[in-house]
Length: 602
Image (cartoon, rainbow, N blue to C red; front, side, top):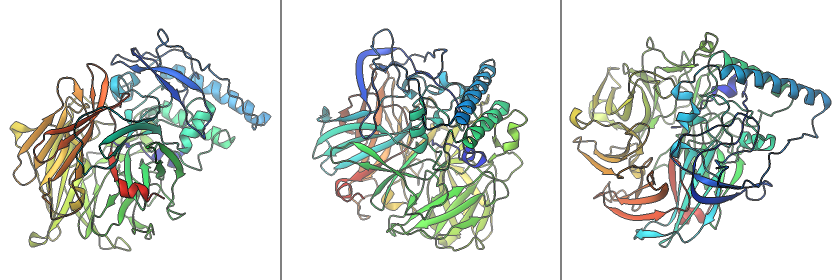
C-alpha cells in the first residue's frame, strides 16, 4: 500500500481538485455518534456502520463531509453548510465561482466514460474498504483469552479513509490518512481512531469538499490535465494553499526520536501524539526542526543496532529524481546524497543491511507526458532494465554506488536484506509482483506476488532470483515484516499477509526463508485482516528469532464486527482477541510503541 500515494501531483502543480457529496451505503442497525474533537469545531454527525453492500452515490455535489450514512434509518442532524469565505476579496470570489463552473463541466464529461476498476470508487472503497468516522477512546474492551504480560503499549495502524465522497475517479491509496490505535495496559485494552490532520485534510474540511488531487484515481488522461490546470488556477488566486503540504499521510508509521510519524511519500511526515488516555492528536507537519526540505517515502528503516533512521525522497519532475539521507538517533540529519537516475522511478520501499542501503530502480516509472495522450502517468516501461543500487550507509555522495541488474524484477515491498561476504553478495528478500503496474492500471492478467530471494553479486555485477516457496504452495504474499531486532541481518523467518482473494487478506504465513516451509494462520470463513505485525517478546537478540507475537486487525464480513488478534508466533496459536467497538477498514502499515516509550513522547 502503500500509499503509496504519488508525490508527483505536488511537484507538477501541487494538486488538482474534485467535488464531493455525502457517502452512503446500506448499514447495520447499530448507529454511532461522530463528534470531532477539540480544538476543531465541527458538527455532530450520527451515522451507521457500513454493511458489505456496494456504495450508492447521490448526484448532488458539495454536501456533507465524510461518513457513510443511511438516510432511511438514521437522523442526520448536521445540515449541509454553505461555506462562505469572508477573507476572499471580490476577485477571488468571482474566480472561485468560475472555476467551480469549469469543474462541474469537467465532472459531467468524466461521468460519460466508464472508470477502470483501479479508479472506480464502487470497487475501491466498497465493503470494508469504505471509510469510517473518527472514534474517541473507548475503554475496557471485551477480551477473549489472555493478553501476554509482555505486551504493554499501543498498537497503531495507518490506512486510507476518504473524508469526502469521490466525484470522479478514486484509488484506495488516495484516501485521507486515519490511524487506528489499540492501547494495552496490564491486560486492559482501549481503542480510538482519528484522522491525521494534514494540511490537505484541514483545508478540505474547512471548504466542505475536496480540492486537492486524487493522485492515482483522478490524474490520468485529458481530465487529469484539466484537473491540474484547475487546481493550479485555484492556487494562483489564493483559494487554496499548497505551500505547506499536499500529502495524505495514510501509508506508513514509524516511532523515532520520541515521535510517532505518519507518512506517505507525497509529503513530509506528520507528527501524531498518543495521549495519556489512548487518544490521538496531530501535532503537525514535521520537518525535523527545519532539516528536511523534501518529501520522505513511507518506509524509512531504523537500524536496530545504531538506532539511525534511513530514508529516501523522490521527485518526478526535476532532477535529482532520488535522494538518500539518514538521521542520527537524536534527530540530526545527514546531507542529502543525490542518486543518479535517468528517469523518475516509482520508489515505495528499499532495504538496509549492516553496512549498505539497497535501492531498487525498477520498471514502473512516471511519464507525465502520457497524460497528454490520454494515459496514466504511472506506467510499466518494458524497455527499461531493473537494477538495485548498493550504497554505503555513511556515503556522502553516490560515486561508489554499485548497480546490479535484476531483469524483470518489480518488488513493491522489500522485507529484508543482508550481506554474505564469503560470496561477495547482498541477499534481498522481497515479493516480486506481476504485472508490475497492476496496482495502478487495469489489466487482464491476474496479479501474482511471489516471495523471492534476489542475490546481488558486488564483484561480478550479476544477480540471480528464485522463488522461496514451492510452486505447489505458491500464494500471494504482500505486507508483513521480519523481526525488527534483526533488520538488515540474516533472518530465518518472515511474517507475510496471504493476499487472497486479492486484495483481501485471508490470513498470514510464517515462512522459513532457509527451507521454504510455510505455516499458515487463516482467519476463517469471510474473515479478513491486514498486515501481520511481528512484536518480539523482548529486544534481546539472544532470544529465538520467532519468540514473539503477531498482531493484526481482523474483520468478520458475516457479522460486520472487527477485532484485534494476538497470535503466538512460535506455534501460531491465538492468545487473545480484543473486540473493537466499531469497524476497522482494511488498511496499510502499523507499528507498536511500548509503554516506556509512550511516557517519553516529545
